[in-house]
Image 1: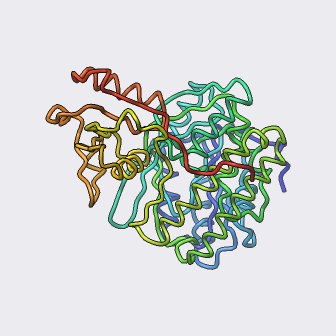
Image 2: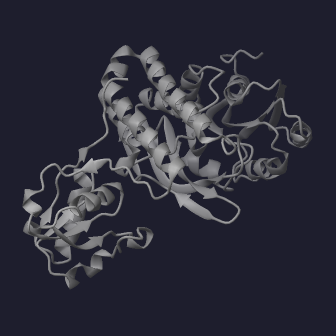
Length: 405
């Protein structure tokens, strides 16, 4: 095997695609890579013991394009396959593509431009989630460049964008929506066990964040994630629950082994993440009508005897609506959200912020978790003519236990 420190004929970018029984999708995937607007890259295909025609397809493409390298292995899983790809790669940067997905024709050009201009350790972009009948662009963040000067700032980024994704900011766990400096992904991916076959991208990304000083987030959708009957689709609820709980255990152990101080700093946040995931699964598995509250207002005296408009129909707003509906002396006269058309419920209507002036009210309760977002909404409402003294925001209390793990 080629020594990973003895690279020959460096190129700008290495693209690594693990392949396992992907024959129906592989042509589209490989073609989307070869049709890129840049040419200075190598495509590394790892045939992970496929028993269909995937291996032959890979070999056929390699005969037609010298940028393609194919490695055939026994079936060992995606972690081992990606390690083989990294080990044989020679690019300054590395991208990953899953064999049943595909990419926009200018994805690599755009990613290289962004990482070179920003000096980032990795760049994350949005993606398009596709099924047979739907197509949706996914972003869970605002664009930005993050200069993380110390360990505390890296921990904060990890909490905000991976562990506390119910607070309105998140990046996808998949390493396929990103471009990495090769030194970073080499360092982090080799810390994963080859046997880690569930949530390996999430674990790797946690390490990448803790090892990065510069991270760039860009709201462009360049990757097409195709949802099909993958390995998790046929799992029953119990099996999936066991795997997810196992992942949480591996997260704690990985961080503990990485750095005991960092693990100590993040123990409560990991506890929060684990409990939130557990409640998410309960809601998902049992009924779409089950809703388990996560947030609440500890002090509501300022709302007693008042006519209240709730602004925000996300998780916090849903929980506030449930809580305040129990009080006879609090009248919820309207529920408002800027994206009201995506926030309709069987038990209540949600309206746009432009309708607020049609109501007589005493208070507008901002139902968001972060103060920065609350201040932005407040400024918007004031510009629309609302009185500042009628707008109220209180930091939501969290019902989730965040103790030791």
